[in-house]
Amino acid sequence: MPLSCSASTAASACSGVFWMWAQSTSVVMPASRAAGAPGLLVRSGTSVVLARPACGPLGGGFEPGPRDARAFAGSLPGTSGAPPVNGAMGLLASCLAVGGVFGGSVGDTGTTAFLDQVRIEPTLSPARGLRRFLAKDPSESDLGLRRFRLRPGTPRTVFTDSEKSYVFGFNAVMSREVEKIEDLSPEQRPFGHEGAAAACTVLDLLTLTRGRRLHELLAGPAQHHRHAAYVGAGRGYALLRLRPVWGARRAHPLMRWLAVDGFGFQWSLSRADRMVGRRSMPDLLTRAHCAVFDQGLGRLLWYHDCASPDDVGARIAGFPASRRADLWSGVGFAATYTGGADSDELWWLTEHAGADGFRAHLAQGCAFAVTARLRSGALPDHARLAVPILADAAPDEAAAWTDQALLALGHDAHTHEDFQRWQAHTRRSWNRRHRR
Image: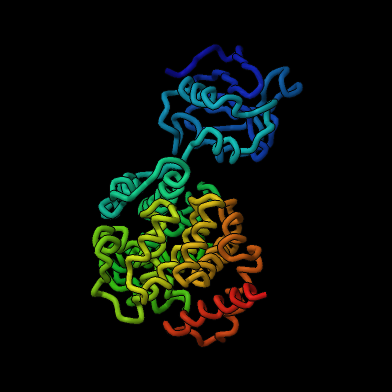
């Protein structure tokens, strides 16, 4: 139940613990730098204001500050987006459980660091109208329900978190709260925009708006996550069992082929027994689509076998030789973009790809992945670890291979053959460096 005391009394705890100061059922906590620390965040009813000390950070009374502290409101009980805890005592207990959340005196931590440490995830309002029937169940992010070979530890967490972020982004569009994708961590944000693009594509196809929502997303919130958005668009087509061509023509003439990659990932995710076990190919695709489809399937194999290089190598060995090159390209992309493997496992992955004769394709997939990550503004630690191993180059150099290859194609590149040449030129850059 909420903690209550007189308005003239404050209960103070040691540094790094919540301050409770009642004014009605107000909750007070150290304010972040973003809110204008030092000070306390005070809730009264559903409003949140910043209270600053009148005489030093720990002495005297508190006076409301002029700044708006709404950014922190979502972490307080009883406000929009509140975590599932019971009142102030529940929130206090949550932070005590992680031990020293604030790690020092009042106001010496930022809002993002606080949210990360107490693991408060952003929440969405329920979708309304017909959109509520399209919203995804959060349990869809549990790949164990799809009988994937998930081993315990970091890999399982990595893949589950990426799919959670995808589902969150999808539902953010359905709830008309796409801006909340920015509340995800920088590492997970691209997956959120991938889900948002999938949702926009589904809505565009169902309402015959010729890609309007997707293009608005690309021009606005996802402008730095275009690779993820195009892949997500392909996942949207797969959800509706439509070939990713109609409605995608207004997209970037070359990048739109990434939608076929996303289609391959989602189609295989929903039909893993058939696509992975029986190694079949959907009838919806033309021969031009099949190679890019296999790159999406290759990404799915990295998830399916939980970043185990031995299992992935054995799985790819069961496919016809004509399909393995693109599968290894997809694996290289996923191993860099999503992660899940340590350095020893990444070295073993290069050994398996080299033994199969497709080491350059693994490096090319890695180069495309690091380019997409750098475009999004943040290079995660797992990508920084993977690039020197899989591409045998620094991240900036590997990304430059793809940029140079794209420039070499000219402004009129748009066909499937152009997309394949883009990848082939990238592989040549790796080959030239590898022969030195």
